[in-house]
Length: 486
Image 1 (tube, helix red, strand yellow):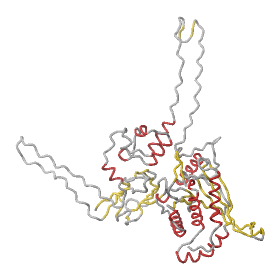
Image 2: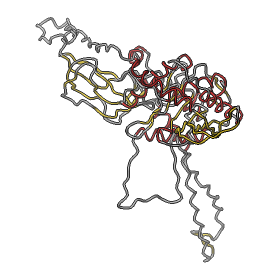
Image 3: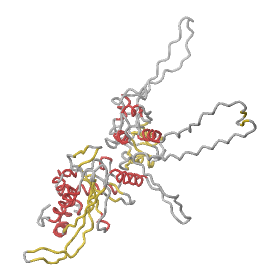
Image 4: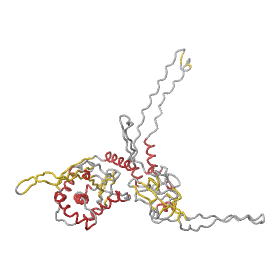
């Protein structure tokens, strides 16, 4: 029997660690190749870790809720393959009587077998093994590895490179993890309470004994007033909720603990509101031509392509066109720098069956036609609802669309998906009476009307840009070609 070391695979360029959510297989269970062994979670997405080999699980190296570094051994699987031959240790044989002057031969060194290579797994572990171990915590920044998340937290907390290099790391080969940095920030933020400076005692004059003079009792010292407790600052991304008085729950109230994804959403939303001054603009769009066109072609499209065409890819196409007209919407902010993005990566908010929300990304949407966008939307939505999204599927978005109309809402004021600077909410499409201008004069007709709202970061997007961009989206939807072919 051979023992296979299952490593935590790479889950994206910026992902250096993951949390064990649940073990699907227990010690003693038989595992087929490509069968899931455990569920893990990163700060981006949940996923499963499959086994590349057939075998029986004999050891779990980590428990649920443990944080594991990429490339670490997470399980041992016993396979049916013959174990790699390793040099057997030298047999211990009683030495024959020899002259006292001749020392017995030293035992041959035992060579430890090398762990089997794991195909298709991140090469980070191999790189770590070949890298010289960190000798001390003063490793220079050029030689010490820092994940993008650690660098971002350090930048937000104004931690210098020298200070960052001095922080002890608990990761592989002394690497600094997110938890190491957050613990350091917490200790640095909470200063030790100041020791009250006591006034120097006066030199005793003649006749003073035990604080009294000539039978006169000395005044009792005034007790020191306790210092006000120092408020602990929240760590980066942490949701800090303050109440005027403690919250209580009665015996009939139900207390529900937030799951991991809901906590991440809460922290991300609070961080966004603290980061960006939000402004929201609204516009109505007459999408009658668009609605009638979709009704006309949707059956033929589904029969030909094997999937449905919804309004979402149509909205995305209009947004991409408007971004090309107003590229300063497709930016992010880094301190005092505005980073203008070359690619248009559209994030689409997707509701999950458990009530949570995830935002998969359509990469380089400017290079796709309507058919390509439709296929990308359907694929990502299906992967999101079945838990098959990968970390790369939810990263690098530059603009977000959320469809509140799917829940029969007229409109909303969405919160910006950081580090983006704008987010579009599309409302439900309703039939309404509207004034139509004709050569013969104005008439009232029943039209399909939809409200859209755009929340934008007023640090870099002013009302003129935000309003013009939103109106341009409405223009593309209202001027839809009723004879268009897909």
